[in-house]
Length: 289
Length: 305
Image (cartoon, rainbow over all chains, first blue to last red; front, side):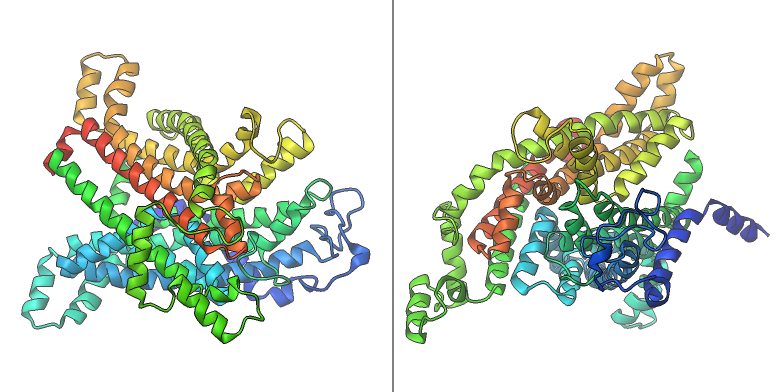
């Protein structure tokens, strides 16, 4: 059974580490109320600035220590995963949807609409997206909803370009012409005949973008233009911890480490998915390894 | 070649035109600046007069063309907060950002190219594994955290380097590493795959069969042909850096355009925000155009496309 053997090869190469990391964070976010030892916002000044357990003065009650208001860092990281993943998934879905629609239209119809969309892509790629996003949030006001909207509308470009490229080559296939002759509506051709061909690339890109969106959300919160305190967000924890860097390094270190782990997870899984789902990449990888 | 470059130049102009539209729209999303500029006790008649003075009561397209006309004259309006023109404020901060970006870019290229080349020559070796692990981590670490950790290690704990401000070369080291980290990783990975593609071609095999030294095969024959995709990714990274400099500048209190822009956003000083966005974008478009010119020298085939 060659298919079984092939599957086994991919499973063997699968990034167990990356999948485990993502699984753990998703579970932490889903069941934060059960998993987290403390409330993420309750303050206890008597326990303020406790170091993590492995340092002198640290206890197993607060494994990763506490912040300047005595809040448990581990609990805040666990609840922070919620914000990061919610923003990540919704923003990726939103920008993926916008980008896919525009990419399908652009690649299928060509002509003036293609030129228009591609110039839009050029314009967006030439602008400092962090600054644009910051300016937009400054204008709209920082809130969870606005962050998701702003990230969604500033990161559709990557999807549009990839989808357009794929559509251009899929369109040349006979089955598309046959579908036209059979009298399929344009909508049906795009949805049933062309879209399935771009799904693989979308999954890969979406996974890789998830990590980037999580970094971006934390950056916004870090600059004070993301979710607002006391909501536990990794970016806010970093910004707070930065002020205590000289005598309480753990405040800024652990939340950043959490961001890095999640992004590492998405990168590992994304790279693996690309090798697995993209036939051209697959051939290239086999040749190189 | 001239036709190709003319076409690219016109496209760049269209992009800059589009940028003015977006910048204009963002400013209008912020709502009525009269609330910001007038004291709260101002009456409706005073507001109306003020709106008339600023030209806010005219149709939106008239306002846009006025805005274009002013930009063409380098007039981006007065900063609400500082009593100077927004343009001079941004231009004064520009050298700091350019210095930081060039330092970070140079550092990235100097580190990334050898890593990418060595990984490609000896795929699956321990050098390759080490290099690519570094690249994977470099792409996963958020800029701001990298900056904070570098400050923690080199400024707070070891006390070797200053953590804020601009000055001599010692001030530049930590921000440049921070800003360059992601690009180093991206360029290293890209150089590796690009070199792997080239090393697998017939002309490289021919060069080897001819008995050329490995040194010449790799550096002269392979690297030159692998350099075009690497140049593409590098120019894209340059844009990323101009954008990423915002966060690096905030962490290290680096007095550049990004920091001015973020402070202007905090203060709702929108003429400055709009100038910063516009100037950064135009520089990026200019760099892309320069890269196009360099392409035509590196690969003469491009002009026929």
